[in-house]
Image (cartoon, rainbow, N blue to C red; front, top):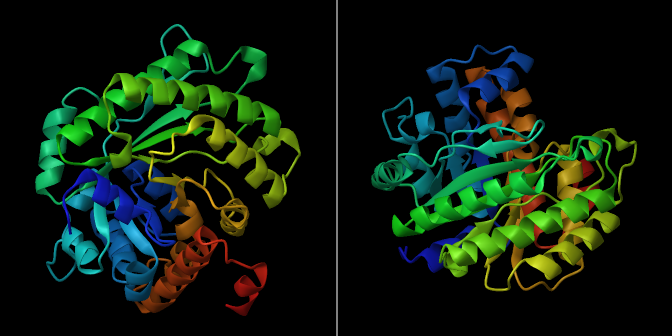
Length: 341
């Protein structure tokens, strides 16, 4: 496959395929494993992820790339094959999470800024040698209107860091996935989510332009426009689609080849239904697909539950969710397909 950034970015969002976000930190995966009663060890984490990467139908037909954690990109499968090689053999592209997490923003209670720029150039060179051809950096924008969160400074600091990260990635021959996540936690309405997301994306593209980032060699990983989780409102997929597309048409340049949504705490089928509604009102200037973590993994985790005898069941659950989201990325998903499975 070509090593041009534009070609890698185009391949990530090709024909309904999307990304498997398997980049949970050791702390996050431990919480997920606690739920299914599995001890989180280097081996159990490897076995779980290997199960997904070896799910041949899912990986070859529906998954374009996998976002890995530092531990995983260096791990070998039980038979000694590097996990990166298993991903590549399926035709998917290995990627890597490179940020060091969100930390409190000094002077701005309730706001955070994502750290990890120090030493990033050297880390990217290392990850490139390990096989990564795209990377991910997540900025976290919380909403608490009563406390003035997010502040203008928080949006500026986070989008500036995203732009510096993106420029370093492109210098290293790696496609940057820029992820400005406006959280769905909170009691805000859909209009507030739209306004905060708009302010964030306008600033983001100003910063990317200033940093001389080539937009054709990037992918945007945003939130959908939704009411906050504790608002008491569940928006219809049609409303989510209408507001999300309005937002992107006002803020995201057509030069960006694709937008791969995060699921952001939505339920599995909710994330699929919303993605489908967004694609059903196309055509759009960008490919619109998925970069889901929990919305792809909750079902296979439960089916697997740490038992070697459940690997086939885990792979079947993963393949089903990947297939549903692939159909949604093409605007061809129906709720009846979930029942049929």
